Image 1: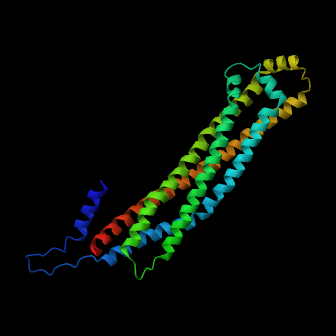
Image 2 (image 1 turned 90 degrees about the vertical axis):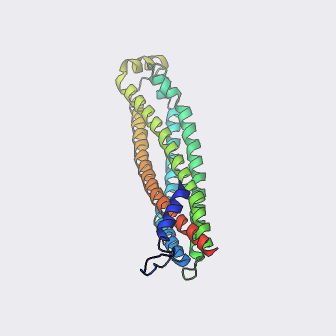
Image 3 (image 1 turned 180 degrees about the horizontal axis):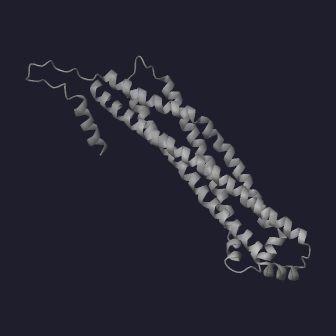
Length: 266
């Protein structure tokens, strides 16, 4: 498909280059230098957007650290709460089953956060490499091979790392969504199954209502914290997707102009 598009585009650009039998003056061909400038302009748009996105990308690292803190708090709440761990044993299914799966959710989310951190570092390095190489290009004396090489790097490495980061963030979103749902189930269970809670208190000797109130408050706080992080995460994913769409369009254009210029310079 790309080759067909390139050929069609080339025929359109150079339609006036072939000799004509009519007495009308022949149109001038598009030069390699003009094509190089077109390619440069599109790569410049990529560079500009990358620089504008730097603050957003850097905030990802802070977000991942904050998210780790939220997950740690969630894990500690589940593991250290005597009230929850004992009451849950007397809750009906699916509540007990959901809570028993919490450890798996926590492990998965921690793993996803670690993967996202590594993917983010790769994308940051790729971005910096692209910007450094772009700044080396002399706009007055552009070479088609320079544009072609950088366009290829952007098409394969830059877009690839951006997509991997997007996937990593969506994996975090999926696991934290499940954590939020589980926390909501715990909240509902503690609020609505007073009979089971009273039974649990009788079995384990928990007769202080203040303790249960404090623990339920912790559950609600963790639920709210996870939901807040989810909103922030989804906003970041949307921004990354929008930037990716712009990058793909500009890089594809630069790639086509560079390939055509390379052919002319042969």
